Every structure is written in C-alpha cells, then in structure tokens.
Length: 161
Image (cartoon, rainbow, N blue to C red; front, side, top):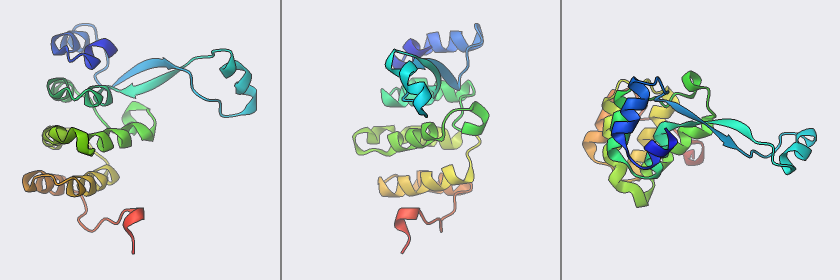
C-alpha cells in the first residue's frame, strides 16, 4: 500500500482496499522512534523499531498525487485521528501540506476534501479556514469550508491580539 500511494498507482490502491481489505485510512510502518524514557533508550540505540500508523492521505499529498487523493477519499480515507488512532500531528501535517506555497496546485484537493463525506472536527475545519485564507484560496473553496461549519471568528493562538 505504501508503494502504491507514493507512486500514484490508483488501480493498485483500489484493488488493495476493495479486494484485499487493506485500510484506506492508515498504513502501519516500522519506524525508529526516539524513546519516551531512559529505559527505552538502550533498545532505541540498538535498533529497536516500533510500529507507527501513518495516514494514507499524508503519503499521497507529500508526492502531490491528486488522483490517488481523490480515490482514497472515495474509498473511505479519513483525517479524524480519533477514528484512526494516529497521532494528532498526522492530521495537522496533512492540512499544512495542502496549504504550503510550493504545493498550491493541491488546493483543488481541498475542494475534494470539503465535498467528501469525511467528518472533520470543528478545530480541523477552523484551521482549514485560516490556512486557506492565508494561502490565497479561491472564494468558492473558502465558502465551502464555511458551509461545513468552520467558525469565521476563530482565533488561532498565534493570531490573538
């Protein structure tokens, strides 16, 4: 699934999800994660690898694969970390990637995200609104984010007077 997402092989992604029951939301990878406490440090130094869940949407956005992004949304991919049991950093990173200046062409993905049946949290919608305004998104996209329930009066912590 990782290979198919990274290389935009939509037919393989669809087959993996529909026929082989792979998750459209997350992929578990092996990662060498820094330890949380001193007892784990010895294991970490000696190559202890632990499983880490990654959002599939993050993989395709990282490589700017529009077709794979739309397909994953159709297949049920989500960004709500409560449903997927991934770190909160995953969904925040996804939204930031969609709005970063080098990938402005990915703003069309936001329209697909807004029109999909994905359940976004109130905070995710509010952040999406702020990021879309700061990145110069089209008015139609901003209106669709507001229609989903984003708060136009939302104050980001770094924006408060």
